[in-house]
Length: 378
Image (tube, rainbow, N blue to C red; front, side):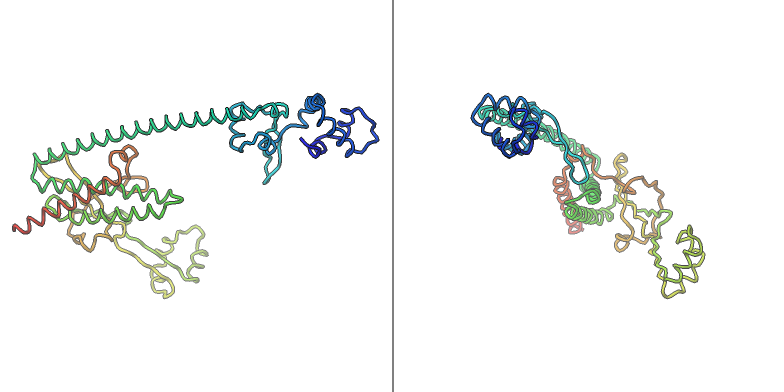
């Protein structure tokens, strides 16, 4: 508390009433008298605080100075009830009315440094306990995840044993590659979703997505040439990609013809005229949205089947002409992907991205080594 504070928060009439003195004095002299009185008389100082608790309330900035605390400590002590709020006051900022708390000066001045240190010690102990409990929970969670992964790998080994009982080494190698290629496809889709949602790491997720799709294509290039592959071709109802740019004259004709006419309806009406126009541009990519359908299966394991789809523009250079393949019909699913899905949350625990990558590389090496040996023996 200072003369400047007294002058700013108390009215002249309030000071006159408190001092019970001659009203002929200026406010500056009255403030000086009041300050001299409360500075040297503790009883009068207390009487002043009791008389004007709201006028002399402590605002946040002054409270931090009086208690030597930080803003976060002040807010925490208010939440915990250690600093009772006398009232909330408003100030206008950025077009909004914001509230801030003020405190009874008598309460604030009664808080001893020892009490502040005790509050801080209690907080440090609470933080330590929460961190210890959090670390314990995290450790338990990690251990549960490790146990779940161990169980998953045991089940995978039993699956391999079953395949070995039903088939030969080639079948196990091909099916293993197909299995990990399936998870590569899911992680590719997972990173594709992350690209769409990301705010900070979109470039990282895009790089991962592209790397996964490259690995998937590499694996499929091998799988399609194994005896367990069955190729087909899927052509959706709108398989061709069309693009159209109208010149200024035809654009105005389109807008004048009918404001609600779709551009492709307009194209169908004036197709010959638009194709002859040198300023208009029409391009059609045949089967752009079509897909090769690849299934990996064996007659002695009818319950096991792996299914993949490869965009026609990507695979047309290394897969047969679609006219020589059986046509298949599929029901496309709703959502961001026509076929397949990303990794589910619970699957991310069992099939971590790094683990799938390691297993896929190993499967690629095994199939490559197997077919190299067969070629040398032949």
